[in-house]
Image 1: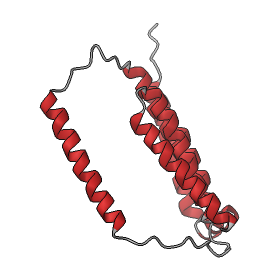
Image 2 (image 1 turned 180 degrees about the vertical axis):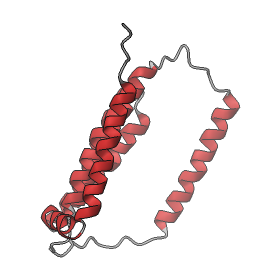
Image 3 (image 1 turned 135 degrees about the horizontal axis):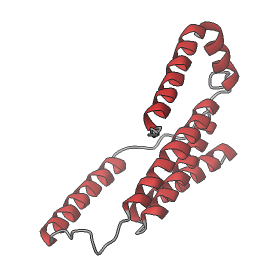
Image 4 (image 1 turned 30 degrees about the vertical axis):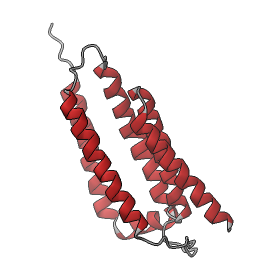
Length: 168
């Protein structure tokens, strides 16, 4: 096997394993941390597809911003099993039954397909950050600057709205 195929299969196995740990973790904090590792392995797939910009944006947006938001939300909820309402047994049985049916459908769909061999992408200049930056600053300068002014005004507006007023 070629080294790129080995790396692909290792990344795929790590992605699936960390996604399973997300679902089956008892502690929601651990589930969020496994989701961050899953996002990093997906970014590894982007790197293998020669899309470095997407990999970096994926890490910054998902692993950085959204996972921090999830982590703080989970920590602020203070989930306790004693205060959480318990589900009826019939509802649990229906959930297991529908999940099993979905699992059988997925297994049948996977068995009926033939996996295609992994083909490494040709080296091109498409996904490089340098080319995206040149295109952005050369051809789309005005929309980029307008978007930056909109983002700046949104940040100023959120600071003004969040600021506490002082009464003398």
